Image 1 (cartoon, rainbow, N blue to C red):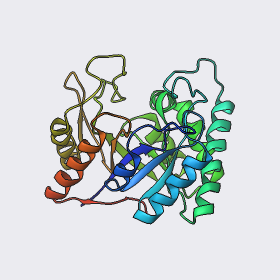
Image 2: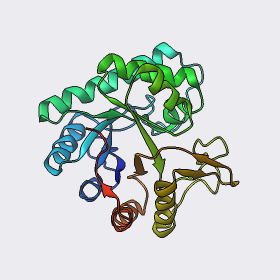
Image 3: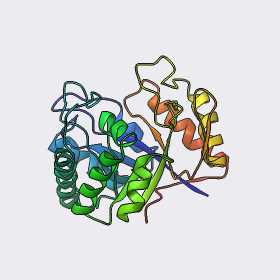
Image 4: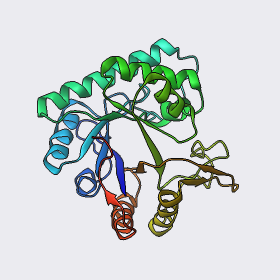
Amino acid sequence: MRIDLNADLGEGYGPWHMGDDAAMLEIVSTINLACGFHAGDPEIMRSTVAAARDRGVAVGAHPGFADLHGFGRRRMPGITLREVENLVAYQVGALAGICALEGHPMTHVKAHGALGNAINDEADMAMAVGRAIRAVDPGLAYMVMPGRPTADAAEELGLQPIFEIYADRTYADSFNLTPRSQPDAMVHDPDEALTRVREMARTGRIVSTSGKVFEGRVDSVCVHGDGPTAVETARKLRAGLMEAGFEVASTIG
């Protein structure tokens, strides 16, 4: 059985860096790279792509709303679907160019923060992101949440889906992520994260904070690279999944 372990990296800007990207690159099999709107810049993007290439780690775009100060975690009421298409195509295209410079082709797209939450709630937004992905490169995979509009959009648009679960976040009854404003949104304990992930990966069952259950496919596990226990959690997940019989590797290709 193969399962992917992914993390959101490259989320610094200029001289400022967030998280321990070097350590995470030694653990995960896939990264989602900030493309300059919520974090990241061309030099961080290029150096991270090169480091991923040298370690055999797959690279995908991690586009977000144009909100550096809010780290892309604030909603943008009133944004149009055309604007969503524009910002996603712009960021994915930018990373495609950087990946070409380093000879390490991009594999997928995963939306960041508030954009990611929006597309997993709103079907028209999920389709707008999918259209932008397909326009830039129809061979790119769309990282989606099981049972949410992104999964439907990938199917409708003919994009390869990567069904993702989260190690360090809990689920609302909608099976979108619990809002960060709620006290039970985060899973900080690496051992708890491993227990949850092994069960989800083994059974395909996602359980909400109130006990509702959704059964679906699991391809990839996300660990947020900016968390205080990110590196420890990622190490425990990789070791624990391998002990459970999983091969930890990119599910693309």
